[in-house]
Amino acid sequence: MNFRAILFILISAGALALLFIVLKPTPQPSIVQGISAENDAANTESLPANKPIAIELIIESGVLTSGPKRIQLSQGSEIIITVTSDQRDELHLHGYDHTLQLIPGEPAKLLFTASHSGRFGLELHHAHGELAVLEVSPRP
Image (cartoon, rainbow, N blue to C red; front, side, top):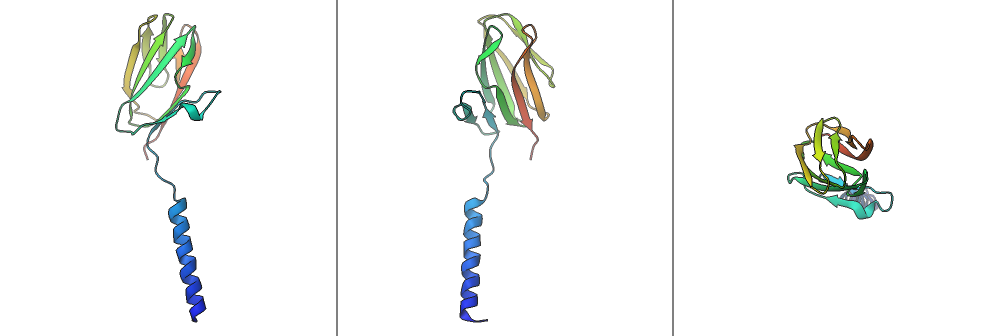
């Protein structure tokens, strides 16, 4: 082989290695992501998987007025959901069959480990409305 061919191969290999390093995806931690119709980016929060994830929901007249509409996390994550409502109701987390009695003006807490993956609705029983969804991704 001549000098030009060797030089071309070395430069090409170096360029490919540099592109691989620059474009390689980074692993992402578990996230809690609140999505609202107004502004998706403003409601995104990232937290490491080894810490309990704290979510606060505020409900007025049976409608979620504060807090994420979509909560994303990894299977095995621990989560604490604090709910404050202006009306008496019962919050139900489908798929996990957890319920939370809501008393007007009093924060109620639901602590659990996201043991199985899937998409699960958080629903008010008396108001008959879905407030938010919990999306649990399988362990890698």
